[in-house]
Every structure is written in C-alpha cells, then in structure tokens.
Image (tube, rainbow over the protein chains, first blue to last red):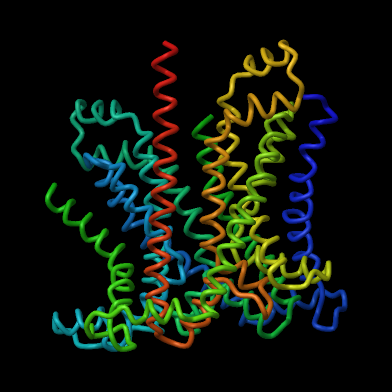
Length: 269
Length: 266
C-alpha cells in the first residue's frame, strides 16, 4: 500500500476519533466550567466540593458500587470455579452469556413484577413464613438487581483466568502436600487475580452510572453519579453542574483503571 | 463437596434465568398484572402486533441497528487496517488507547458528552443523532474484532501478492478482505447487539420525536406493569436467540474451516 492510499483509508476512522472520541471528552470538560448563565466560572467545582450534598452523593454512589462489585465477586468466583470443572463447560458458559443478550431494561422490568406486593419474591417469603415485605423501591432491591445484571460480566473474566491457569501448578502444589484450601489460597487465587481485577473493572464503573435502575427499582431513593448526571442534563437542564459530576465520574473511572491495571502489567513483565 | 458445588451452580443458574422465564410466562397470562397466573392467552402478542406506534418503534430500532452496524463495520475495518499499517509502536498504542476510550466510558458520560456535541454543532436531536451516536460507540468493538485477524495474516502473503504485481486495490479485495471476513462478520454482529442493547446513550440524544425500543420500554415501565412489554420481551428473546445462534454457527464454520486448513498444511 502506498503512503497516499493509506491516508485515504485512515480518514473516516481519524474523523471518528476526532469528532466522537476526543471532541466529546473535551466538550464535557469545557462545559463543566460554565454556570447556568453561560459564564465562564469555577462555581460548579466550588459547589461540588463545598456543599455536602454532592460529596455525600458521590460517597454514597461509590459505596453502592463497592457493595455491588463485592457481592458480584462473591457470587461469581465460586460459580466460575465450579463451572470450569464441568464436562460441557463451553455450553454452560454460553448459558451464562445468554442473559447478557437480553436488554437490561427488560431484566429490570421483570424485577418490578417479581418484587411487587404479590410477586414471586413475596410469594416465596410467605411460603417460608417470613411474610410479605415492601421489596420494590428499597436500597436492597437496587443492589440485588444491579448484582444480578453484573454477574455474567464478572464470571467471564474469572473463567478465562481459570482457563489460562496451567494445571501443572495445581498438581505441583498437591504433590508437595498442600491441602485443597492451601492450594486455592496460595496458588489458584493469586494466579487468577488478573481475572478478578478485569471483572472489577467491568462491574464497578458501570455500577457508578446505572441511572435507569435507581429510577425503576430504587424508586429514586438511591442517587448514583449516573442518576445525578441524567437529572442535571435532562431534567434541571444545568449542563455545567452535570458536566462537573461527569468529570468526577471520569476521574473515578481513571482511578479504578489505574488500581486494577498496573499490577497485572507488573506481573506480566 | 462435589454435590454442594453442583447445588450452588444450579442455584446461580436458577437466579440467572428466573426473571427471564418470569417475563415470558406472564406474556401468556390473562389479565394485566405480573402476579397470579390467570390462564393462557395470545392476547398480549395480538395487542403488540396491532399497536402501530410499537411497530413503528420496532422498525426504527431495527433500522438504526442495521444502518449503524453497517457503517460502523466499514469505518471500523478501515480503522483496523490503518492501525495495523502504522509502523511506529507508540502511534499504534496511542491509537489503540483512543479506540478503547468509548469501550470503557460509562454510558451516561458517552450520552451526556454526545448531547453537548450535537447541541454545539446544532445537529437536531432525533433519528440522525441516534444513528450517529450508535455508529460512534460501535466502531471500537469492530476494530477490536478485526485486528486479531489482521495480526494472524502473514506478511509474506502480502509481499508475495505485491511481487506478483497486485495493485493496492487488488491487494485489499483479493487478499486482505477475504482473510479478515470472519473478523468483520463478528464485528458486525457485536455492533448489532450493542445497538439493540443500548439504552442510556440513546436516552440522552433521542430528543422528543424519535424513540427506540429500550427508551420506549423505560418510559412504559416507569408507568408500571403492562403485559404488552412482556410480549415484546418474548419477541426480543426469540430474536436474540436467533442472533446468538447465527453468530455461533458462523464461528463454528470458521473454526472448522481453519481446522481443515491445518490438516492440509502440516
């Protein structure tokens, strides 16, 4: 390929990079310095850090994302582990992936039915004698549904890490007299940690921004960073403040990426 | 221990599938709540297919998905070709990192920043803005699906063709494109599912007149239970299964082809 032709091929992709990757990020940072009257100002950031409301909301959102990631990890690791020992594991893995192909809103909608007064969850609670409860529009239901949605995204990277693990390590550990628990604690888990980190990356960041779930399942009681951004952009039309929260979310994203990336790179070297 | 772990696995799979089954079961239930099954009926499916607004939205959604996936596949393939062609390692790493920005960004950020972008450029919100956004967030996944195939291609194949006097055009259409077709198809399928799955980005840039299925489901679900949505999820589940099946068959056949090639060339 001649150099000239090559540039011809690069043009559409380059345009996309400029217009839809670099420009929007630059615009959201730029917009965050404007107040409601379109004046260049730092008040958005001052408001964000001074009024306790925004900081509290951010901490709250990070806390919920942490809980969702924790529960997802606790459920997914054993699942991936057992799954990996099965005979027809490829088929089972496909069954794990399948629910991710169903629109997230339909899954959220299903839980509106399941958690309703006479829904499946309350029928079950009544059956085991715990009586009906208000389940929908609680913080617990928000965490439950978010965890449910994220589970496949955590299972997959952990499964892949288990798949990459050389079985010779496990055999060696057992030959040297380690118990099952010791083998897991000192060999399997450390070696599959990159998978867990990839899973955390895939779960934690989206969990900060799940605004549709806070509306449909959380009943507006849980406010995540995503909910706040959506509200500022589409309801109160305060784009400046919305962008400021967006910048905070981007910074949070970069921090999470750094925390989950660097170590794996170091290990690979 | 073994029994216990199996039991755990079964439990996880039950949790994974109960909501989906629940949705589908109630799409066949008489009455209009998702509680206490009231007997079998096709009524909600009949309502769904007699709802002109819903049908128009389904058509719009499919149109956006197909058009955006086609465009994204074209641009993404060109992008993968040019990333592969860059000789400097640093440039390639920078390009790949830029490529991945939209893959890792939260949906709200993509949606909000695109909304600012369209408003700044005075592009009206509606079909056009939704289509552009979908193309934009589908391109990186196409690049990621095509690049590995390009890397597998041996450079001697290209030099041989060049030595035999192939023009750039011939090189592309006769050698490169046939070789990377599985990657391009995989990218197209992924782009299609990304488009059908998206809610947040569309929700930000859709404006008032235009709606896709996800946005419509959201606004209906906020008003409460409506078994027509259940019927819709039945139809969408069937459609997803067909897509997954198609994708799976595609991968199987390309894997078989590769295996056959390996047999021929020891």
